[in-house]
Amino acid sequence: GQTPVVALLEARIAKLLQWPLENGEGLQVLSYRPGAEYKPHHDYFNPNEPSSAAILQHGGQRVGTLVIYLSDVAAGGCTFFPESQLRVHPRKGHAVFFSYPSPEVHTLTLHGGDPVLQGEKWIATKWLREAPFL
Image 1 (cartoon, helix red, strand yellow):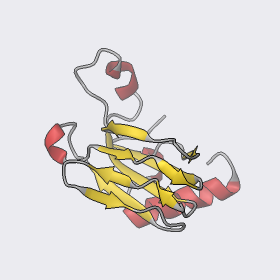
Image 2: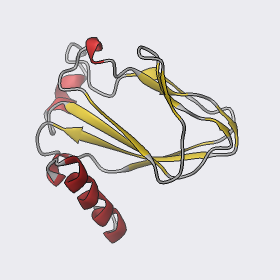
Image 3: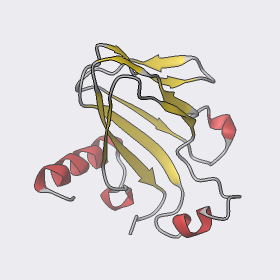
């Protein structure tokens, strides 16, 4: 809720996903220029990593991700899931949602961003937590 517009968007996301508003991290906006990419990763926190203990004290584990595409991309920039071979092409106004009820590899939520080949990619990401994120 950093601004009135963001607060409205976050309320709409909470309603759409049927998830408590207070269980969401702040909206993150990212841009990728040609050549930029995001290597495959999981969005949940590895509970076996020492640094995760402090992070998990605020809202618990991440359990879902919503990626909203804020721009079309002329070429490249797909969100991809290597384990399922799924590629989502960025289209302005579209989004992809995936959940992972437990921090385990078998959730098939390993994902990354293909390099942007032409144009720019703009996204907004919303992560859902299992408890209120304070």
